[in-house]
Length: 118
Image 1: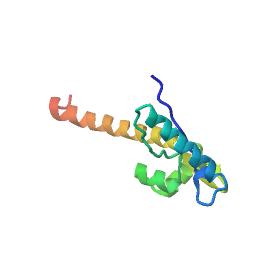
Image 2: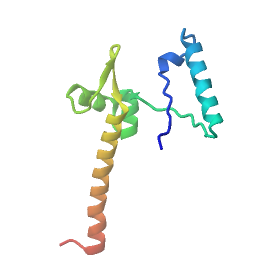
Image 3: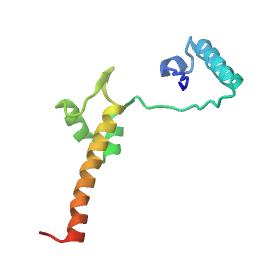
Image 4: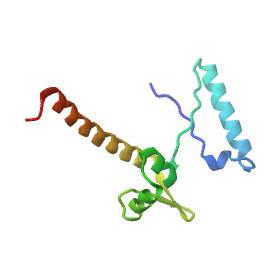
């Protein structure tokens, strides 16, 4: 079963946008159609990019470390205006990688405690 999804770009929704009437009408129609079909509508937000400061906080790194890794290509980023932003999937990759390393390090300690050092 395919679940219909409606995605609204932030620039279309921002206050004062000339396209406000268009997205509002589309959203209302989407909700009405789902209601007529007996469906529940769930509204959520999704982060598309993060600033280097947000990435640093999320990975427990300094902002300067994140900036250096962006500069050397270790962290993929996109430029928006004159500022770098990290796509959320890249942040998730980095976070999962760091969590994997933490688990592996902890696993060695746990095994040493349980089975002793060989």
